[in-house]
Image (cartoon, rainbow over all chains, first blue to last red; front, side):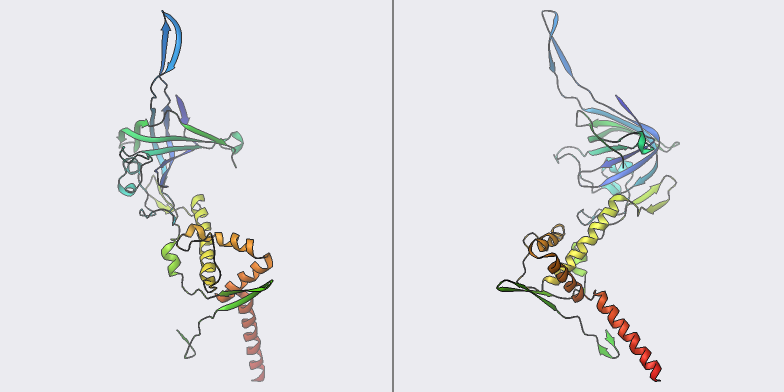
Length: 172
Length: 157
């Protein structure tokens, strides 16, 4: 399991139509877990053949207190979705409120609504390492917990993908 | 609108003739007085809003994506003005520009540069700007003449 320190990171919830919600985290954590099912088939009691089993969706969970939320900038090429309105994290995950017109990232419209989670981690100062962009595609939440006292959100769910897509680039 | 009791004359069509072997290429530029048509097709980008944890809300004018969109919007606006003005040149056709599709407007520059020399292209640009009343040289000259004329009037008094 990969553990991500979110101190210098920005999380984006993205839909399939160019809309996004940027979340700057104050305190919290995000974890994702890639799993693989491997079947071992012994030959007369001795280890022998190995085959890959069914694909397993990635588990994702996060819990944080956000510093700020930033809505999308709109352009003429994007549909009018109440430009300027900032959806909440819940709106973006549930396709409600200001994110009512968000489009699922899943190309199959018959499947439940999903979003992409993109984590951009840029160590500071920039000489400390490359910028890393981690994409957790087609995320659907399964549990959403609210802590009113701490004003925090805790969420867990699965991605319809077996692994994260990671890109590392030199920082400008 | 009137000036000194008379209706102000609208800008006229400006003409440039470029000799090309046996042919003469006639470029006509008409004034573009309204951007309503442009505004209907191409909306100005909107800066993203930021909500802070304490409830404070403001627009982020420094957002990279927004500034990129704004730059593209300005290019499209300029391209549209150029194309709209050159619509007066009936014989001029752009192959990769669809007037209904804003994403294709900026292709005009590439097409023009393939067909015309740099000097010719600059002259066409000036023609369009002049037709649209954006020729600063002409405006400055007129302003200088006006001020010089005022000076003479004061001396003669």
